[in-house]
Every structure is written in structure tokens, then in C-alpha cells.
Length: 84
Image (cartoon, rainbow, N blue to C red; front, side, top):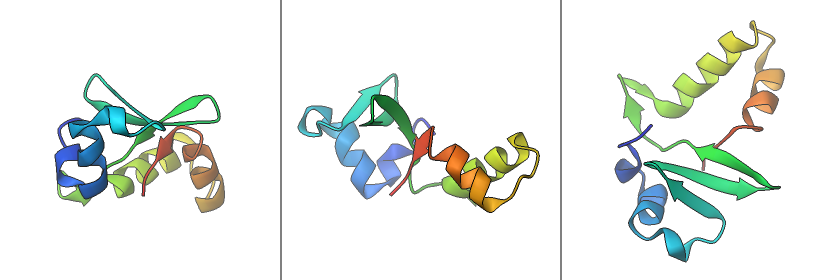
């Protein structure tokens, strides 16, 4: 994820000027959306190892939850990540 924000038109603007975005935090090369007292990792619109970053995150979440299905996977991921 680190290093790929520059390729995302919205998230790259946060990286360049984080103080202008009150609902976002830029820390240690990562962008987070602050929502409900939690920091959600922002997933950039980027290609990583030939796949969309969002696709990789969904696949990893699906595997982590022992293939419980799309609804449960997305509900779980919404607790930890955000994308536009």
C-alpha cells in the first residue's frame, strides 16, 4: 500500500497536504480515514503485483474469514479499511 497513494488522485492530495483533510490522518506512509473513533486504512486506486489493490484486500479478507461469503467479508473489511 505504501508508495501507491501517489497514483490515486484523491489520496495523493491527502499525502501532499494532510492538514487540509480533517477526517484523514497520514502516518508512517499510510493514509487513514478517521471514522467513529477508529482509523480505517485507506486503500488506493492502484495496481499492485498486476492486481487492483482493492481486489487483493478483498481476497485476503475472504481467505482470512475462511470463505464465509461476500457479505460477511465486506462487513468485516469495513471495520478496518476504506476505499473510494
